[in-house]
Image 1: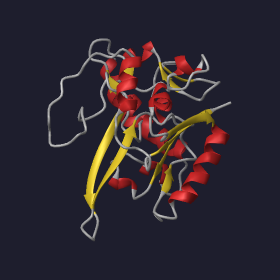
Image 2: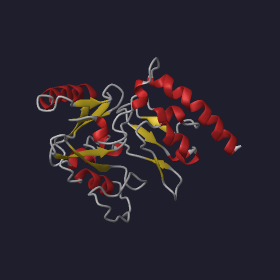
Image 3: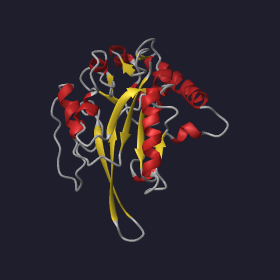
Image 4: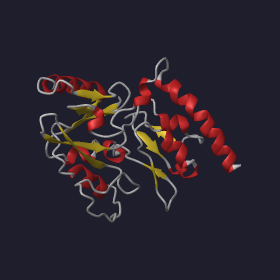
Length: 243
């Protein structure tokens, strides 16, 4: 049965435990950082940081300053645009047991800009040494051993839940009803099309530019139709460069 993760940002304190745990579990090397006037570090996702807690500061009309935290990573789309954009068979696969979108070693032969451009959440990154395209794999190795994804396991605030998709959707709906009593604009981001569902208390733009996929709402077109039309010219261009 498909799995899902709920990330309740109203409970997130930006401790970055998930970010650190992910890096340690994947045995990623250290990445140089510097103070840039924000606690968000590194500045963006990268080949050695596939989980990143984003910080967004804004001021309310009454002068109240609010911090919104967004633990960013792959959404594991049900109908993955990146898979549709791949030119090689099985370079990007969807695990039948979990629904996790997995990038294989064959992505080293894919056109990176095509794959990254296909993602409505700007997730894929390129490993400069191996040339593989990388992202969160939902800790498929842990799930296969009946263990929680490491980000869920390490969340001290209980902001993350993992389980069967139907169960997670029920938990999400129940939690949303509670949050909306205090924050009427609260919503579940793209819950019908992704396996990693974010509960946010305010407008998506106040969290992250790619908190939701605007393309999913293209008028008169399904998500699949939208990306299918976009990919064909990209694939043609990539073949011309390779050929």
